[in-house]
Amino acid sequence: AKSRGRSGLCFYNRLLNSAAVERLRLEAALRRALERGEIDVHFQPKVDRAGRPLSFEALVRWHSPEFGAISPAVFIPIAEDTGQIEPITEFVLARACRLACTWPHELAVAVNLSPRLFYSGELCRRVERALATSGLAPHRLELELTEGILMEKNMKAVEQLQALKALGVRLAVDDFGTGYSSLAYLRRFPLDILKVDKSFVGNSTPDSSDAILVRAITSLGRELGLTVVAEGVETRAQWDFLRQAGCDEFQGYLFARPLPAEQTLEWLKQYPD
Ligand code: C2E
Ligand code: CA
Ligand code: CA
Ligand code: CA
Image (cartoon, rainbow, N blue to C red; front, side, top):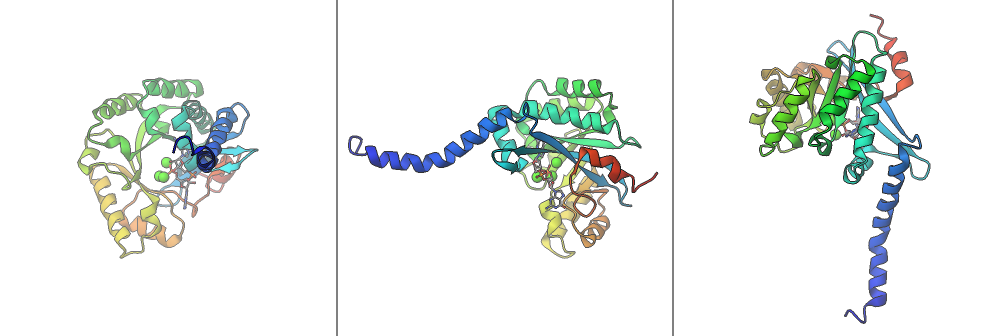
């Protein structure tokens, strides 16, 4: 088969390669994206039960001249594999802290941290540096971490979270309900905020099974003294249900889409004091 298969192998390789080559092209483009100014950060507000803004979440954007707009759901995993996640996060952190300093009323800013970064020894130093450089008060910075880090075997996670807490920042579990963390472990970690995943929120008509989950997760979070945030709120009916379920904060298209940095102050003007 080895001697005969030359042309067959070539053909087969070509099929495999189209996906692999595409990925390599993306990787190469991503490697230059920061220096070429193609990476940007948008900000989506979170509001309280009265609909008033409390904070914004920083969401990274990549507009490649070659590929167009690429979703962070696509390029963040690639950035994690290639190590680009480190400079990208540093960029997002710096932008987020700097912008937050321009907002009134001590509004907070939230930054997403990927798991790979979470275990790098540099994390605390990076966060500290971003705070020092911008002058943002630590309590105005929230770090969003996915549930994956709360797994039982990761006892290092407790230490890392405690070290971050010691800086004075607030810690959030993102996408809660989609991972495999044990509920009991929620208590063990020094968390402040629980974000109910938007997949539950989207379908939660009052007697659906998602609604039951949202109510259960919300009361659990509140019992544990956490601020419970519902994301992906798109309709007034969802917001009403989520308020009734006891959620503290809300985020979603109903309030605003992620906004370019320059538009955040403009958006805030509709809430004079
Ligand atoms: P996430 O942290 O769960 O962010 C929420 C996502 O839901 C965002 O997608 C946001 O634009 C979208 N969204 C907000 N409101 C609504 C709504 O009402 N309905 C619906 N259907 N969607 C809504 P986005 O910006 O595409 O980000 C996707 C994911 O990429 C984020 O999910 C986060 O996990 C990751 N990501 C984004 N920025 C960063 C970053 O700077 N660093 C890291 N590590 N990950 C990031
Ligand atoms: Ca998030
Ligand atoms: Ca989320
Ligand atoms: Ca998500």
